[in-house]
Image (cartoon, rainbow, N blue to C red; front, side, top):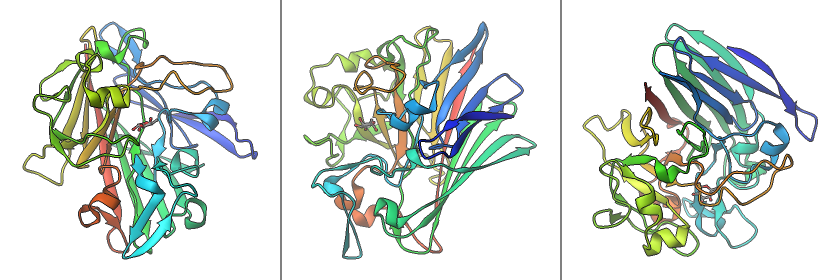
Length: 349
Ligand code: FUC
């Protein structure tokens, strides 16, 4: 493990970058700002590959229009009208009557976190802590957040654990917004990658990108139950693909017998088939986003990405379930803390 100074926020607070390493040569760099995964380097038979998109400086992350590598909270995805109702009490999370995206302007992607490094027998851990304040983001109740990044010693795998403790009933739905690109040059479109999504159902989205009820993937371009090239779907004239400018949809993960354990959510295979990523999760749903607007938005350094240069596997509870089916949501409350995991596993040769 090593750490270094990464930069200073506009208000003067210092941000550090921690790099976890394992015995096989995998390296993951995480910032204390937003718990951002800034770099993930995976060994292959012929060298090492950067597999995520990132910026080189803090100024860019303070803008970060596409949420590169960031922790998303309190609520991943969009909450319709920015309105949350808990036990008949309504919380307006947004002044305007529009969807609240990724926790809003005081989302977790912008929080400075306290870091602790822990070396354990089967890997290295970085533990990040902060308190999400009700008075900041408008969600009810202060929540103590802990994020644990664990790079396994003898497997090219990163496990991310999200924990939240609140003294009040509240809503928490966290994920990570890494954009993966497994190609050798890191630029080849995700269209040239192949993907599998372990889902029989997906949710079409409305004009405001709010998910509608589940629908079968069968006979739609969203059928990724078998590994297939992503551009087959990106090039489709399907109305849902046109609406989102690509894939930006929730999928309902098929559970195996051990419903509380990790299940395989999705698999991504590099164009040269040398690296395979497998995303496991404890979560019920996953939003797959094919980087449809990565070319939009500017950052101070001028660094740019192309449309579809990366793909996100945002394991989470279906966005807006709080309004669609509050009875099916997980509510964080005293005695019932939030606890979810994602495990990114790489196989390479
Ligand atoms: C994903 C998408 C959103 C948005 C954002 C940057 O989570 O679901 O539509 O564009 O990323």
